[in-house]
Image (tube, rainbow, N blue to C red):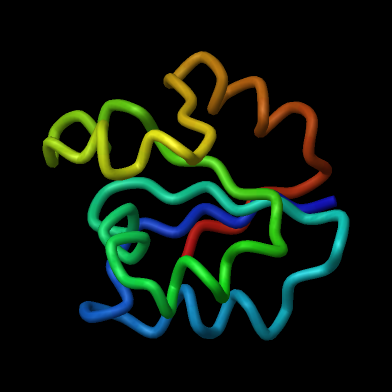
Amino acid sequence: MILHHIQSSPTQSSALKTCLRYLDSSDSILLSGNAVNCLLTQAWQEQLQPYRLMLLADDVIARGLQDRLSAYKQIGYSDFVEQTLIHKKVISW
């Protein structure tokens, strides 16, 4: 069980696309920083729909996307730390 931490937007980096190739059904994805912007497109919403997905709430708020991304699970920094302890491994992309 791996926590995949994606920090950059798919327009900035291929990290998210690459991550999806290696994802296992027991893994989770945490989007932070500019990576939360990918959920503004229908294509990425559909691609990420089958996965266990979390967003770092402070980054959603910083971009003024609370209303647009309210359907997604948003976590704080303490929850982020908890997730790193729950998962066997963390990979930052």
